Length: 158
Image 1 (cartoon, rainbow, N blue to C red):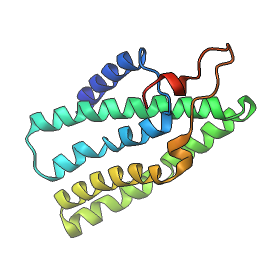
Image 2 (image 1 turned 90 degrees about the vertical axis):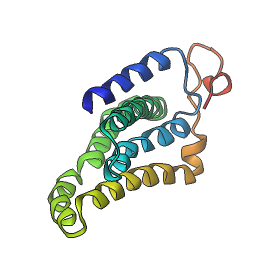
Image 3 (image 1 turned 135 degrees about the vertical axis):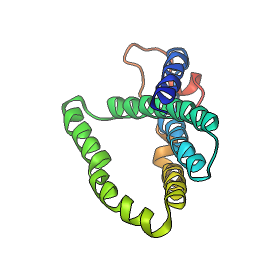
Image 4 (image 1 turned 90 degrees about the horizontal axis):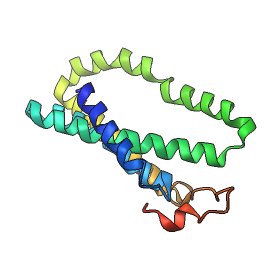
């Protein structure tokens, strides 16, 4: 599964070398919602080949999200604040992982493994897509080029 996800990330990287993201958050958040797909399929008892295909799709989504997130942070956070912004990002991204690991077993024992995995996959997708309710997320453009090039938001999809 991890190898399939990595293959998807490699494909996305090759595409993103040629396709600029005009609105990195508007593209990135639906893309990261794809991380829920393998969990939904796993919870639903899908065959292994479909899980592997879903992992490839999730890898694409993760890479598109990562590119969009890094563009947004690097272009809209003052350079002197980048280290702090990335530190808070890492803390926020990882702070609840131990809590989830502690409660996953008892919750799965109480409700069953498949329903918990399915609910987790749906939660990933819903949370990622819910961020699009914010106009600030949807409308965040690329920063103007310091070299006088055309605004990427006007020439790129997304």
